Image (tube, rainbow, N blue to C red; front, top):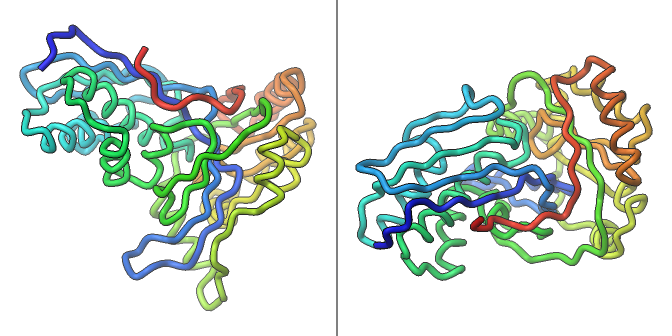
Amino acid sequence: MTTTASITVRVPAKVNVQLAVGAARPDGFHDLANVFLAVGLYDEVTATPAESLRITAEGHDVDQIPLDRTNLAARAAELLAARHGIEPHVHLHITKDIPVAGGMAGGSADAAGALLACDALWSTGASRDELLSICAELGSDVPFSLVGGAALGRGRGELLTPLPVGGTFHWVFAVADGGLSTPAVYGEFDRLTAGTDVPEPEAAPELLAALESGDATALAASLTNDLQPAALSLRPSLTATLEAGTAAGALAALVSGSGPTTAFLTKDAEAAKEVASALMASGTCRQVRVADSPAVGARVL
């Protein structure tokens, strides 16, 4: 085991530029065509040797995250340690900047960050495939948090194919009061689609082409989220936020993942500032964040 004092990993948030959701499977999960795009909002996870597994946190809304072994970051450390026959004696300190329970994979990002930090701290020498396997065990969004960039997630989102991105996309994210439970949103999706023929999820060719060309207008025309009706059903107030951002000049607006964060694609950085100002003035959200994409995945600093 290494004697390194500490290892810090920076890991990005994500936005789903397409989230196509199939019918519920027998295991309760849903087959997805999930086009992930990493955005430049980051959490940092610092791993330091300790006498036992311990989690601390600072930053935005840390009162809403668990600081015990139910935290995905703790589970990541435990899984890696178990595979290598060592004790998960580590202090994981999370510096939060990704919205909590906001549909931007903040918890998944922390898990990927903790996994990479512990791998480096303990010198486990885990292969990329082993790390991705542990990520998939932790949750559907965790593998993408490790990889970053842009990717198509199949299965329940964990089977990744990297996607080319031909330019920079400019986003504004409006953070709502409180969170939305991902299982609750999927449950509402099941309720809303009950008795209907839910098509097999497929990535939209025009959306993949827009990503590859870096064409924001074309990407805006093809953004979709099959969970949006469910999120809006559970949190109707998000409709006003979406309308405020669109009225301010966003090219497109959608709920990010399972919400309740809403995402606004803009034509350039200047437009992003204008949309952000208008959203804050609208009183329909708690805070706004501006970020570019794509962003790199989890990286040791």
